[in-house]
Each structure stands twice: as structure tokens, then as C-alpha cells.
Image 1 (cartoon, rainbow, N blue to C red):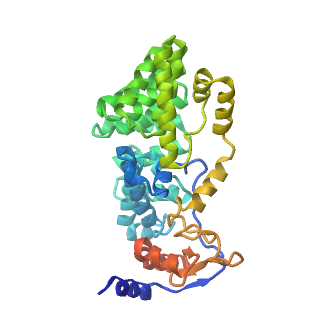
Image 2 (cartoon, rainbow, N blue to C red; image 1 turned 60 degrees about the vertical axis):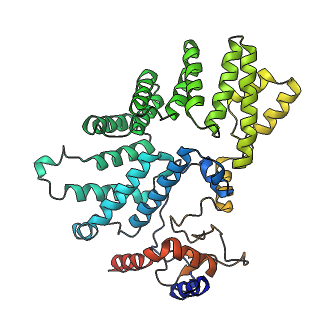
Image 3 (tube, rainbow, N blue to C red; image 1 turned 45 degrees about the horizontal axis):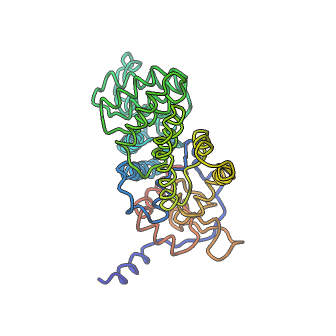
Length: 406
């Protein structure tokens, strides 16, 4: 069969799409505020420049994002019920979806946003795990993934003290956990201003995995905030530059920080060298990612220290943020960076993120005629999404709607 014929065959198998209003009671998931973040790696892929960067953390992020999507899409086919008969029927799917998304969070927490539906899945997962546990043993019972699921929820909810307790239990019980678990606990300590405990966990993360270079960067930033620890800040920023990838925003921030720290120590020539490296890296970053690395106080200090007053004024005006976060998110959606098929939304095409029917600004999106649970702007987008993800979901979504209507 030729590629054209295969494409035509696939198109025939794709359900029809039709205009529809959102059905009363139609479930629409909502991601929690602050859990969806703008990640530079998404910008890199959106611009088609991923092959120009060999950053291993980028690869890990994209793998984590894909694993999260896999778990989330399975989660969305499971009824939102805690009834025992439903949990028994979907037990394996509940476990698989939970384990996939927890694994994604541990790989890179930025790839795993939290939603209302995922919170329900956490309850379902807990009930499934406790199903055959005697009542007297339930209070102290836990397994690795359920502990990590709880920690994920607590961290997103900024319940840092409880998250520390949960992660500590996981670390003490499962010594094979990766370096990122110590990093996540360190972030909780730092959020509570317990700097010494946060530093200790960052050092433990590096003991666990000397290649976990992000810990060096955070250590540098922590010591930068402490007036009497500037030498340690310099040491850790240099270690990050040595071990991290050169084409990241953290590298650029570290270079700017070193230019300021060394300038304060009257090492003018070395400081100027780091500043020039930061400017060059900034230009390369802009070319790859399409944006500057943002604007921080340390960047402002570096510019002021190494540029003429007139040039500094121009650069600060250029780098200063001009748009709010929600506007940035809207730009990402429009550019296609966030064009995933989750959560299904009658106001956004699940393939290209368009907000109306193709070439018809006044017309609503079209729903899949089979499951009526996912929306598209055109037949082309539906066919493309059907091949990549919706083909596996469509029948499950039909079954889910039938289950909920009983």
C-alpha cells in the first residue's frame, strides 16, 4: 500500500467531526494554578531547533513529558469514581497511569503539571493499593509510588513541611531513589528558608549523581544570597559551568553572577571575561530559543557594572519584562507549543490549539462524532491527532461516557 493510500485508509477510519455545544455535565479537567510552566525546551522544539542542541536534560525533559502524556491520557479514560466496582474494573489502568505520571515527575517535575483529575486519580490509586490490606495495617501502609504521588501533590500545593516528611519517608525506605528526590526535598527546605538543610540535600544529590549539575547551580544561587558565602557561590557557579550544558539559561545566569561576584573582589579582567561570555551565550540562546533568558537582579547588576550608563540603560530596557505570564502562555498556545491533546477543551483544538473552526473565526470547534469528547478546528487536524494519540483513546472515551450515563 502506498503512503497516499495508507493515509486515505486512515482517514476513512477516523470518525466524523461535527459542530456541537459543550454538553451539560461534560467533564473538562483543569490544571492547577502555577503547575504549568513555560519551559525553554518547549520553545526549542517549537522553533525546530532541537537537533542543534545536545543538552541531555532536554532529552530527559521531553521523555518525561511524553511519559506524562501517556499516563494522563490513560487517566482521562478512567471514570472519576471511588466506587469499589469501578476501581476493580479499572485497577490496572489506575496503577499504570499513576506509575507513569509519578515516574515522569521524578524524571523532571517541570514535565508533570498537576490537575484536578490527577488529584482524583491519587485517591483512586490509594484505594486500589489498600484494597486487600487488613484494616489494622492500613494506617501505616505505603508503597514507593504512592509516597511519591503524595509528595508530588503536596509540593504543588506548597505544603512544604508535609512534603518533606513524605519525601523523607520515601528516601529512608527506598535507598535506590534517584538524585532528583533529594533535589525536590531541598527545594522544600529552601522554600521554608531552611538554607543549611537545603544545601545538605543538594550536596547529597551530587553524591548520588555527580552529573546532576543543576544542584551546583542552585547551590551557587543559595550562597549568592548569603553575604559571607560569596566564595562558595563562585565555586559552585564555576562547577555548574564546567558540568552543565553551555546552551541553557542557567549557564547564562551563572556567567552573569560570576561577572558580578568577581567584580566585587576587584578581579576586573576575569569578571569582564565572564560578562562577555554571558553576552555571547545570550545571543546564541536567543537564536535557538527565540527569546532572551529573562531579567534578574544579578543580570541588571552585571550590565550596570560592565557597560556604559547609556548602553546599560538600553539593555535593561530591552530585557525588562513587558508581558504578564498569562500572555506568555497564550503566545505558547498560539504557537503550537502547548498543542497537546490534554485536557480536552471545547474552546481549543486538541491538535493545533486553534480556538475556532479553520478559516471561520465565528464558527465553534468540531467534536469527534464517535466519542464527542475531543475537539478540532478541521478534518486535517482530526486525522493527524487520530494517528498520533486519539485512535487509542476514542473507544475508551466512548465506554467511559456510557459508564457515566448509567
